[in-house]
Amino acid sequence: MSQSHQHSQRDKTLSTQRGAETEVPWHSTPRPLGHLGTQPRVVGLQSHAWVYTQVADFPRLFATRGETIFIHPTLYRSSLPASMRTAFGICAATLSLNQQTRPILFNAVDAEVSSLLGSTLAGTLSENLAAFQALVLYQIMRVFYGDLKDQWAAEQQEFIVRSIGLRLLRQTETELPMPPTTWESWILAESVRRAVMFSFKLYTLYWSARAGVCKENGALNHLPMSSNPAIWDSQDVDLEIVAKDTIITHGQLLARWEAAPQNKLDRYENFLVVAWKGSPTVEAFRCFRAESE
Image 1 (cartoon, rainbow, N blue to C red):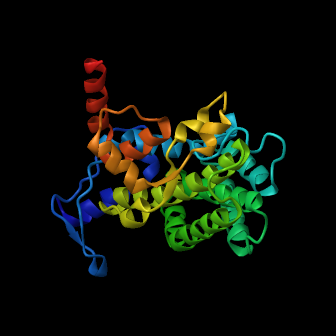
Image 2 (cartoon, helix red, strand yellow; image 1 turned 60 degrees about the horizontal axis):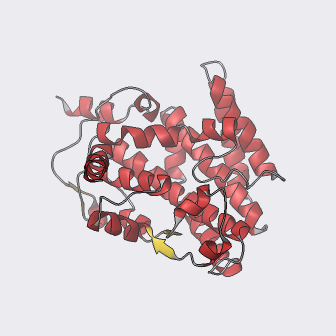
Image 3 (cartoon, rainbow, N blue to C red; image 1 turned 60 degrees about the vertical axis):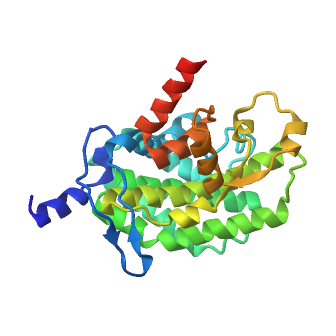
């Protein structure tokens, strides 16, 4: 296979990966990346197809259900900030996306991203979270529904998106110290943590598909998350359990699973572990656990 053909394969838009069993031709040896050192080879697309599909569907899931794995269904039930009202409408447009509406959709995305990045994000924690969640949804649209120009735009904004996320984490730590005193404050803080996690995860997925490397794994592994993420989906919240919740890192979750892979995973934990190990590995341990019970 010629080198130009290999580059052409890697530059295909990620939108083709959502339904097709497409295999991106990875190099079999580590890649030197200048001052970043030698990065490990990442697994092929097939073992992570479920992860790509999940992330690509977030805008449509928000449009049809008002929630995603990083946007809690109760968060905007009583009040929807302007940034999320706009995001809701734009996400709804992906449900009927075609060649005629595509330019309109991405003109709207470009305008909203420019507006959000141009603001000072000096609002309340809730307002800043809404703006950041909208920003993450727009970048997902660019990566998975856009063409090379849209993907390039998302790529160029990687640093500023991650920087805004880290700033939002600092604001959360200042305004909502642990342990949380109410379920609502837990949801708000965990929503911030998950939105930031997915802003980083989106770009690790993008670069693994685009270039065959996992960028920012070190930073990703230091990002915080709840030690009891099942609280997110709880219908009958025990405030005593909420008050006892602690913060772990993404890296600690992965180390904990690697030490005891038979343990049952919450759906958020499952996403993060599958994104790390690939679905065949996680499924194999899940089957092993079922046979042992």
